[in-house]
Amino acid sequence: MNIKKIEDLSFGLDNEKKWLKYMGKDWEKTPNKYDSFDFRKGNSIAELKSRKINHNKHRTTFFGANKIYDILTNKYGDYREMKFTFYFLYLDGLYKWDFKKGDYFIANGGRRDRGRDETCSMCYIPIEKLECVSKSISSI
Image (cartoon, rainbow, N blue to C red; front, side, top):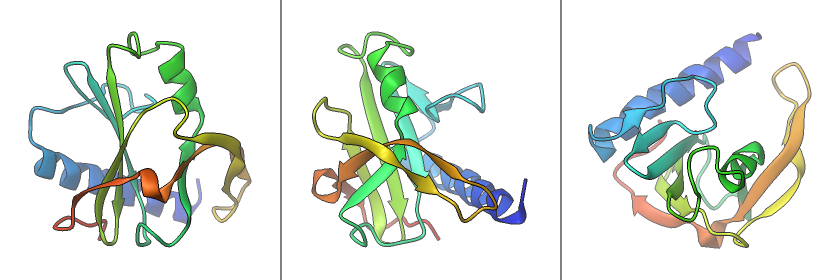
């Protein structure tokens, strides 16, 4: 694993601690570090994506489409009875998107700046679908 990926993982883990402190202790970290989602509270499932940009730098934000596949195949329970929320911690605040079929599109994408090709099917959310949770917390 190259140094950039190690730094990015550390950045994400640090922001998970920040998010938990902000959101409250009733959220539990998922037990397997390879789970598609980071946190659980009852029938609510949450994923945190940490970003080193302002929320509106691009027209969309993205994450691996495998997470949508896991929702739709009921990996975490019947998705119609669960609440799946994707949180995005940007430089300018904490934003969220509650999973809703049709609010996203799937396309190939990813990154190549960590020493290898990390492109795959990605889920893209238009920025206008994000809801601001708080401006008092940021990714740095």
